[in-house]
Structure formats: structure tokens, C-alpha cells
Amino acid sequence: MSFLDCEDLLELPLEKTDESGRVYHVPVMPDEVVALLRPAPGMLFLDGTIGGGGHSEKLLEAGADVIGLDQDTEALTEAGKKLARFGSHLRLVEANFREAESVLDDLGERRGLAGALLDIGVSSHQLDTAGRGFALMKDGPLDMRMSLSAPMTAADMVNTMPVAELAGIFREFGEEPRAMQIASRIDSLRARHPFRTTFDLAAAVSSVAPRTGGKHPATRVFQALRIAVNDELGALREALETIPPSLAPGGRLAVITFHSLEDRIVKHFFRERSQEWVDRPEWPEPRRNPDRIFRLLTPHPIDAGMEETTANPRARSAKLRVVEKIQENLP
Image 1 (cartoon, helix red, strand yellow):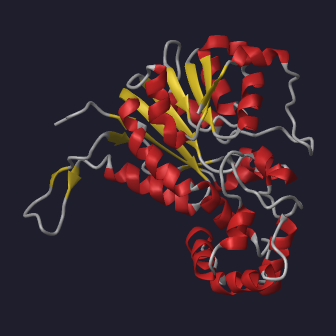
Image 2: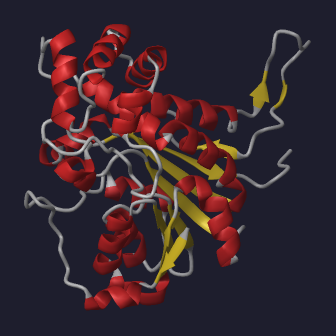
């Protein structure tokens, strides 16, 4: 991990749009996030996926301090330029949110968080930049790494993994019904020519699973590879376990997910850690939940409103869930 001085970024030119002219990253449900996290002067928040800085900007404008993490150096640079006016109220660290515990230890902020936010998944900039390899509709290197220092790209996986492992990734992380057919097709093609670009892979998938509806037939495969390359679900599970101890009593944890695999993990974790009573078949009667650390603030996930989804279609799949830390050892 590495630490950035936001004030140094004041000297850099401010580029708010990506190569297609779009805003670097549009934060999802910023007003809902702020309303539930309730930032105020003197409070400290962790933004585990700062992206373009949209959510953190709202927290900082309310007078709070923010520790912003991102594994993408481009995102950190953009957030630093955007938020440089807040000076020492913002500290930026190049790290995956799964490393939040060690980051907070290094900063001496292990148990003082008023809240934490995880905005899971790929950013608008990553999707819109062909060179990052996330977008199947733009030809670029088959990369998909959120951290450019990560050792394995999507091309490495596609070109070297055994067929059964590839099919397992497509099936588990993409819920792709033609997983084995697609993996077998990839295997036959890579023997003649290794996969190098997003169009190479999209064409291979299309030859097995032709388009039948609005979505490109390679959508699930691209999602699955992205999740595998970045170990997204493993990182999420680890962060959910390690961030709560850093929350002060009354501190809140908000998580925004964008597909069912992520949301299922968050939903189950929040429910298991917020239930007051637990009943198991082998017990004579229900017992208090020894793992309870939260009060559930969103029994049902919050979805983006119509106005937001019209302006930002990527918000349509977003779900926001929030919990509040209770006093430890609450009877």
C-alpha cells in the first residue's frame, strides 16, 4: 500500500472526463448514502472504494474527515485532484479495501470510525477506458485488473487455465449456462492463437452463444473473468469481517453492490450479525446471537430512484444496505 499527499495534486491539471468525454465516475445514490451515514464535523469515515471521489466529496462537504482507499492508482489521482481543496481532512491510500484493517492500524485510527462505505465493482472510468480491458464493446487489451500491479490479467487466465477451471469461473461468477461449451471453444482457439484483446474473447463467446436478446452474449463471461482476476468476492468477504471492529459504537457500514453474487454475501452477513435471537434445530429453544454486532437499518435494500437511473443507467442494478454497530457485549 502507499499513501498520497492530496495537496500535491493541486499542481496537476484537473481532468474530470474520460477519453469518451464522460464524467470520470458517477457516484450511485450519493444522497441516500449521506442520509444514512449522517456525516458531521469531527467524524471520521472510511471510503473503501473512493473511485472518482463523488461519495467522499459529500462526506467532506458535511465537515467530516475521510480516509479514502482505492487499488487503482488512476482513481486515486483523480480523487486527489477533485478533492484537494479539503486538504488534511482527506487522506488517500493505495490499497484494496480488504487491507483496511492494516491501513487503519498504520494511521492510528483502528477504532474511531463513525462510518465506512464500500461501493463494490467496476468504476465508470474503468468500463469506459478501452485500455483497461473491462468493456466488451470496446477493443482493448484483455486485462481487467483494477490494480495494475496485480500479477494476473484476464488474458493470462483465458490462455493458461484448464478448461474445467475456466468453465467453473464462468459458471460460478457469471452464472453462464453455456460455461463448458464456451471454455471448450476458448481452448480450441487458444491452441492456434492466444487471446490478446477484448474483441478476441467476445468473438469466441459469440460463436458459441449467439445474441438472443438485448445483452451481448459475452456479458456473463466478462463479468466472471473480472470477478476472478480481482478476487472481488474474496475481498468483499474479508472486508466485511475486518472493517466492523474499527467502527465506534453507533458507527455505520454502508455497502453498494451491483450484482446478485455480491448482494447475497452482504445480505447474509448483515442478517447473521444483526439477528438478536438464533434458533437451531438441535437447540431446545432460541438463544441470543453471540455474533450480533449490528442493528440492521435496511431490512430491504435501497434502490436508486427513477430520476437517477434515467440519468445514470448503471445505477439500475445498484443495491444499498446499511447497518449500525451496537455496543459490544450488548445483552
